Length: 499
Image 1 (cartoon, rainbow, N blue to C red):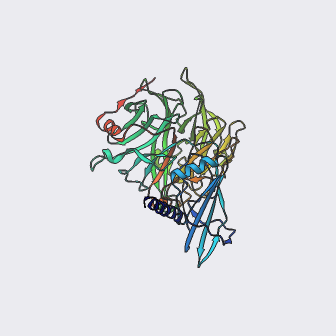
Image 2 (image 1 turned 45 degrees about the horizontal axis):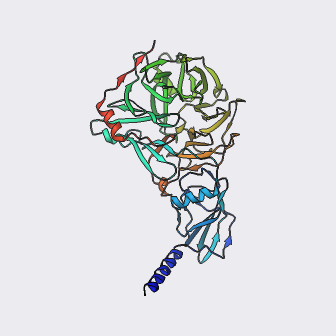
Image 3 (image 1 turned 180 degrees about the vertical axis):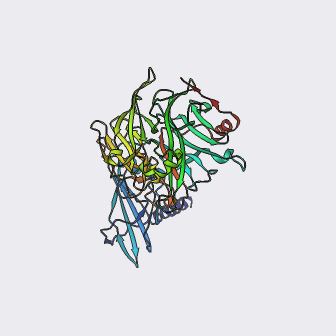
């Protein structure tokens, strides 16, 4: 009897197992059209360690079947949402490294099956950095209590808060957090700013926490837009007097402008700031170090006040479309800390354009930046596109492989230089989402893909924008509570000004 019972049990388990595997249609009509899916992952190149590319079939049908074939096997589902598990997906990627996953979508209408044109995911040889951090912010312009700085494990769907405003915010005390930066992708060496009440710059360095005030009597502000030197305990900042103005008719809604800005260096060990000498009529912003730490790239616009009857802010607002930023760099000697003169890298104004957010690839060959019609905050500008310059030839071209009809901005390189992450509003024109694209050794890009989510439809109802996506080699280990205690209980230490 026991043997019979065991046989019956195995038979039931086998029947249950095979009954859960949907049958792929044997008879169907071929369609020349790709399936309508969201997110649009058809034909993308992906890392061999990325989270599952979950998607939803955006076609109304009576029934659905999707099959993903990989070397040595296949996986299928009859759900409209195509959501392979992390374990199964990792197996697919491991077998398909350097090859393709083939995706077939079948839809049934009135008892007849149609197979939409199959597509592939190409699995690259090169991995992506395992973590990504970003600021999540509601596009309300006036409230930021629910603003958070988050980190996401790119190999699965795990997401956690690095620090959130609500921890130290109540009715009487409000904050804003922004501008996170890491030294050479290292999450143990980071900084971010806390604005308003309890303000200061939070610096974490190998387990040591500090809160500093970088504003001195001779600077126009505390440090604003940062970038760590890749090897030295030095952070470059722009200091800015920034304001927002709003359009009543323009679809672009808001302009973010600087009326004054300069560049500074902050020595973390010495708690000392040094202003980089420059022309007072130059608006210098968004400094970025070269990977070898011997050049500091930045955007700069010349803006001389012409209307002596108006204040500088009013004239900046009135002439906002005249402000065109070029890209420059300055040499830097890590031993002497000497900064060289400004060298023009890309003459955007000569093209009647404006460039911003320069980022040099880890091998030092390519310069990634955003180009638009005017100004420097291209996240708000629908004409903004990503551009790529070969620094050996100084030839620049639009990165057409990644661009869309809407705004592209805030690009960053992975540590191996084979991937970029950037901000895009291509989905709806309102909310910024992170997109990832492969870039080969010759600077040729592939079709980008949206940050994968466990719920494939999540981004169509998620009412926050992602701001400043940054790759990381691992997670930030300092807890939100540790940051909160430092911010709440510690007075910001004043930095010294170097003469």
